[in-house]
Length: 160
Image (cartoon, rainbow, N blue to C red; front, side):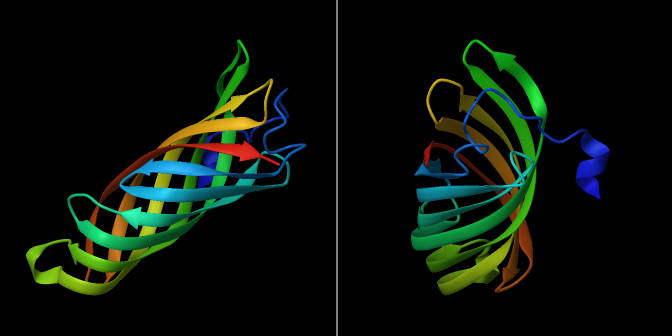
């Protein structure tokens, strides 16, 4: 599998994010902005995240957006000074409903859907159950036709 080649999975760290507190809820800003959540599985190794909100930018306007992504987390790039910074790779799907103009032949109003492959950094605070994150994703449009692009976001989640 692709995550085995990339390195060892995240070991337990001093943060409660993903270990003691597996579910986080927060806000995301970027190509897609709205409510975001993340549920860790198997400690801090894997997780599902989701976002529901709006999409505005070069390809979307007046759109409602939703996505779900499965992530594999890898060893921290660094830890200390109150923060642990693991990196992650993911695969998932997304759906938009509203007005879009991906390329001229796919301009219109309706549903547009596809796959996404994000890579991201999580900034897990050690003293409070808060996670900041940044990610960029390759986005493949499948419906209404095949095309591709990038999306990106930053966000914050509080873990329960």
